[in-house]
Length: 463
Image 1 (cartoon, rainbow, N blue to C red):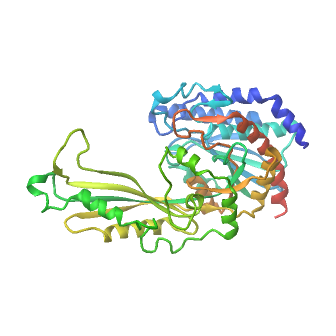
Image 2 (image 1 turned 90 degrees about the vertical axis):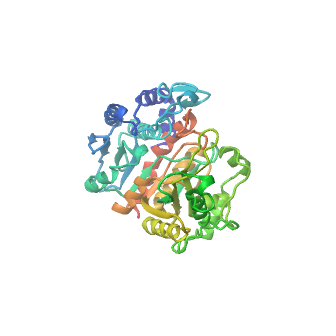
Image 3 (image 1 turned 30 degrees about the vertical axis):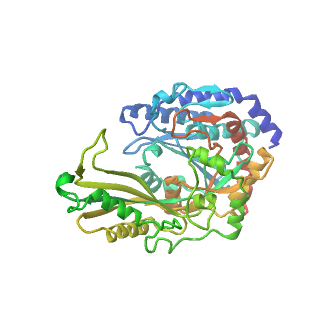
């Protein structure tokens, strides 16, 4: 397929591709809100129809105990390689609504950006895939490989039932590579491919002191304070100088990034002042000694405190020793850390640090394993060539500090490796008011995906 023919088709249909995405974004498919259950279903039906229109031979709704998913396929020849696209069609809640400049479900184009909930996370990037398929079929008449699509409706509410789909639909979902567009590139002029996602483990801590709140004048100094005990426990989990996690065994299984990977990380442009501003104008960056900010985010494990409660926090004073206090802890994990083992280790360290005078309980929470695709994997190299052909420069190879649990599910249950071809930007405001998708990235993404199928067809056929 001549690249200029694909580019010409995409250019001629840009406005239609935007208009169609706007209609998709109008559906308020908020999976976390039961009041929008009918909207999520309508959204799935809309997407299934759109997949058929784009050129998938078959598309259907997959029912779950929660919100429905969409499955579609175009099987060209069973002898050809097969790629499976994963995405999600549900979106985050829109609160706080008063911070939106325009209605979140009345999408608007301003300054080259399309604003609306789900614009980039992930409805816009799913639509990008449909338009990529449409474009290749319009120019060539057929795809060079088999293509399958699975788009869930519960990612923004925890993918509660997605593993059930993977388990029950393994035969239909079988493929040679997983392709996901739910990530970002480094900057508009710096394309990048994400090759790894950190895993997740969690622990919830409860500290119980007296049976009820006590007067701090009458009992203070003789009865242990649960908030003070909790603070002591939490402080014990990090070294105050090196910021290393002090939990025994925490780093035992960590696979260190290779010198080549560290060189690749270092080659990605990074401006600490821009990063600090993106983080809300923090006065400085901190982290584990001996590692750069990028390495800390992409290739090092962490232990963070996500929430803490206890006592009185209203206006004025209430001089009490609170009856209880608690905290939520999560750990971001790297290869080869096991989330169940890490959660147990953190729980044990919390219990071991419990001071006298209080009762401490800690509950390990379900998590997910980290996933990394080798930078030498043929699919990564194929995606790199596809992206370079559109952007004009070789993409950086990065990792993502967060997690996409379904990617881990595919890896664990089906042994399916992933290539993450996302076209978002760091300032897209995902999960926040005024979410956007930069239209230049949307248009480039359609062209990248059109080329990706050619590159993957060759790379996977010769493995």
